[in-house]
Length: 94
Image (cartoon, rainbow, N blue to C red; front, side):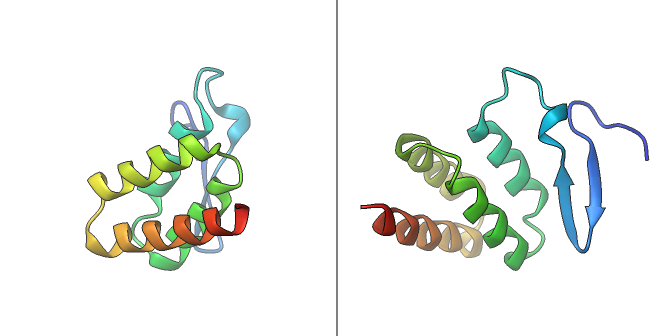
């Protein structure tokens, strides 16, 4: 498989794996999370799973930015998933 700049994509059991070691040093976890969510937005289950993984790596402020970004960039279904998952995650952190 050819390398796709700046990430190395590999399909594994219906999921897309992006090797974080191939990321540019200036790429933040927030930007990485956005990239992942865009790539997996074809499947609700994978979207939810990747969103949950992203939340554990982000600060509270970055989570709020990600939530706003999801609302602005995805349709009603995925925005609803994001708002619910983020709300549940933040309520567990309090």
